Length: 228
Image 1 (cartoon, rainbow, N blue to C red):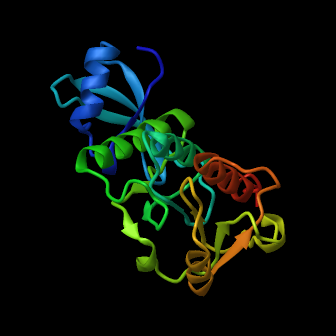
Image 2 (image 1 turned 90 degrees about the vertical axis):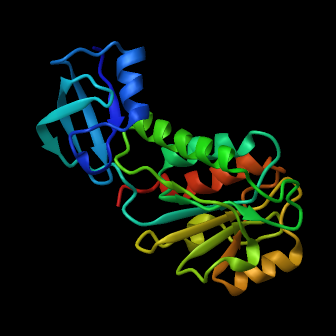
């Protein structure tokens, strides 16, 4: 079996059914095949001992590689039209987000998210964590209204009229919250509300970015310097 990473919460020796089916139906795993399991802060080389489903495995070697950003990074993207949020979740996972909390805002076209779409986004986060070598799968949560946001230790909001640059305000030692508006951007009163909650407006350039592009650009600017 070719090298494979499987998400196994708790490294219990039993794979979740989704991961088991992938090993059995796609990779045609056999007893004795080796693969990698991971969860939160550790991963391990494992060996298939029972095909199931569920697949059961034994751990051969455990390790704790350093692949996480080092602080909590919460992304607050506004609900977006179509399937754009799926791409945000995938890339945000690759860039180190630890939680993704969608927002309902004044200019959001969708105002809610069905359970099926939420589960799909959560599955995308798992797959992106597997692909990118991460140990932690970010939480993807049901949307909340903007006014339900908690106050944050360090926050940034992408805003075309901002003067501050990310590098001028970023403190790499503090947890980080990042807010990005929908296709029509945040309303001015929403930006003011975010500032009251600890978010600093930051400038991402003179060009008008798509909402999904802005979310990833802001996250990349904050986590690209993670070699602390």
